[in-house]
Amino acid sequence: MTFCVASLALELIWMLSSPAGPSSYKVGTMSEKFDCHYCRDPLQGKKYVQKDGHYCCLRCFDKFCANTCAECHKPIGADSKELHYKNRYWHDTCFHCYKCHHPLANETFVAKDNKILCNKCTTREDSPKCKGCFKPIVAGDQNVEYKGTIWHKDCFTCSHCSQVIGTGSFFPKGENFYCVTCHEAKFAKHCVKCNKAITSGGITYQDQPWHADCFVCVTCSKKLAGQRFTAVEDQYYCVDCYKNFVAKKCAGCKNPITGFGKGSSVVAYEGQSWHDYCFHCKKCSVNLANKRFVFHEEQVYCPDCAKKL
Image 1 (cartoon, rainbow, N blue to C red):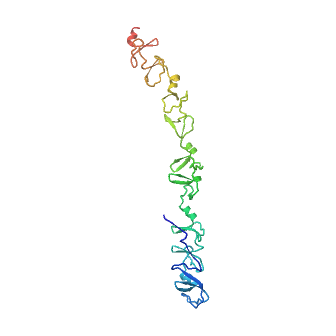
Image 2 (tube, one colour; image 1 turned 180 degrees about the horizontal axis):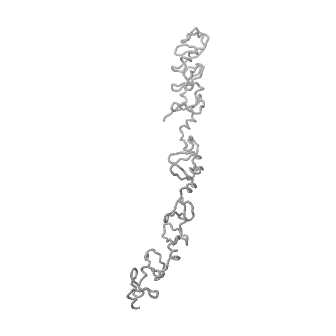
Image 3 (cartoon, helix red, strand yellow; image 1 turned 60 degrees about the vertical axis):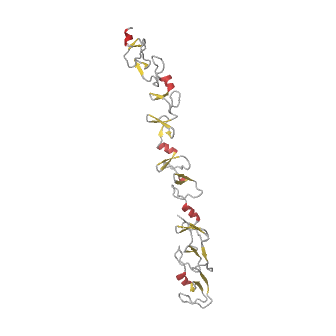
């Protein structure tokens, strides 16, 4: 949309001056014997108007010759001050801003969409509108912009609590915006340990959310996120603590049975446990995992060796 700023282009037509152009006229007092061109009344000793080579009385000038004011739609008399811009005419008192009605007879103005505006209203007209209050955001106003939409700083508020977010942190949800506190209360998952909102860096184990700082070994408090761990009766242990404090000891090698790496398979019998590679015949050492065996005096034997006991 284009608009023009007018200043020197404004023509002022005063009562006793005649600018060049077809609308020029001269006003004076008639000293000779002339009659009005229209009504034929004598003009001698009276005020008259000379226009386009003819003399007329003031009444006929208003009726037949005067320009019509674009604002009040009344004739602009010979005794009035007339303003002219692009084939439109105004009384000087009618020439004002379309929006605020500030007089513009002696000031610069803007003609836009066939309307006359002062510079201040033009600035507001062309300024972006606040999404919150729908009023213009003019130069000097503090504002917030997000994805092509703009707000006054104090109009950018939380959709839930209505507190001003301004330039602070926020969370968008569809057409709404939430401050950190309201977003945590309405949408954020809560840690199963501390019951506080998880805003970033959370982890999930068995469909339960945790802060990474809360998911730690119950014994040494080592963080378990991204590490190997063991869960025992809703308690979580790092590998070292599980070996040292929780894991059963192999009846063969006496080392912890962790379930990690070699020996992940376990043989259990009458309250004792073995690594699968430790479960072998006491005499011939043949491995008896998944095989028949004889348990005699707390020792494991293959059937053949057991016959020789």
